[in-house]
Amino acid sequence: MPSLEYSRAAELTERLEQRLVDSIESELNFSRRTVLGGLGLAGSAMLTGLGQADDGSHSGGDHDSHGNFGAVGEYADMKFDPHEYLYQFNTGRGEQENVPQRKYEENGRTVREFEFTAVDTTVTIAPGIEFPAWAYNGQVPGPTIRAVEGDLIRVKFKNLGRHAHTIHPHLRNLNPRMDGIPQNGPGVLDTGESFTYEWTAQPAGCHFYHCHSLPLKEHIHRGLYGAIIVDPDPERVRQNPREYVDYHGPVTNELRTELVEIAKSRNHEYSENDAVNEMVMVMNGFDTNFDGENEVYAANTRAFAYGVGQTDGNGNWKHDETKRPIQLDKTQRHRVYLINAVEFDPINSFHSHSQFFDYYDHGTTLLPTAKMVDTIMQCQAQRGIIELDYSNHDSGLYMFHAHQSEFAELGWMSFFEVV
Ligand SMILES: [Cu+2]
Image 1 (tube, protein in one colour):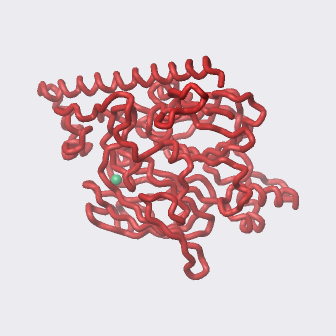
Image 2 (cartoon, rainbow, N blue to C red; image 1 turned 90 degrees about the vertical axis):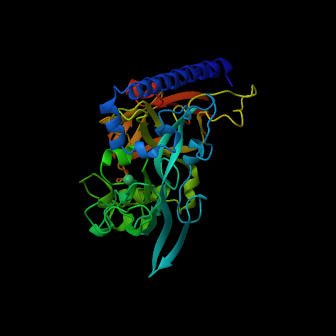
Image 3 (tube, rainbow, N blue to C red; image 1 turned 120 degrees about the horizontal axis):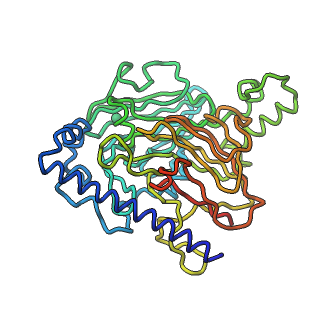
């Protein structure tokens, strides 16, 4: 391992992280003084409007308390690991303990059933910085759901939070009752209420779910969102190839065969899939002082989680080191299911250093919608699939980040470690 390069990257990560933590702490101290001094009427009214006032039992909502700040450099909440989250696909076979789930057949159709709750909790967004979140099954982003095109996704939802919530899926949904918005079906679910959502997994792609209660921007920003991955059904692709390409020429047998092969590589039930390393990244942001702007940005909640931390001196990441790059095996191809959940900022982006990638907007096509690019942008709720290949690259660290420099410096800066 070229140690100089690693120690420089660790220094950079450390410096940015420390600056972020310092600025949040000083800003929170400032707003606390403002509120205590009686000068912040507008500010405190806004906090109440955002539901902050009744969150007093949680550290982040209590402006008289220093409870938000644990020891810098340690994460108070180790339950959510952004490194594990990358690879956690819940398909109904019990992947995550906090997501009760099962898979079964019903009238000849595969059903993937999940139990979801909405809870009030706190999540760690930077060392010592806790954010008062509203979270599906206690985690932000919520659990990733994965199904195959045509399956029935059944979500038994119970609201255990103190505000009214829903689950709204970005899927092709033929029944308005299942849309998870205030006006349709059960509407918003108050504390203690339950509803079972049923969605057809369609179309194939990288999709998004989120709470649709009002005010929408707060319910999303507090953490109620996650990924739904719908794998294409190769047999359906064989029969309807045109639905999977943005292409108007003749569909030859060769093209049809190629599309079927690509569909298989996207489908978790085909074993060839092992050749591809799949990851989920949800780009998110956190408004820690509730002024309508984000102070912290990340991929998968924790600022700089994929930055460079300390090694043990033998080229291994320290076992308890939370900050470490995402290791990529050169012999594999890499696929990122990327979603932008950032509130308050109109766009977000993904930029890879030293390599270009193929991008599939919304993941609904089997041929790329942008070929050989190193930067893509997404508005809120936009998502897509990135396919990366580092097989010809030297081993080492390759940065990737939002190319809004501000977002990168405030947490959305990461590294791949190609090995
Ligand atoms: Cu909500």
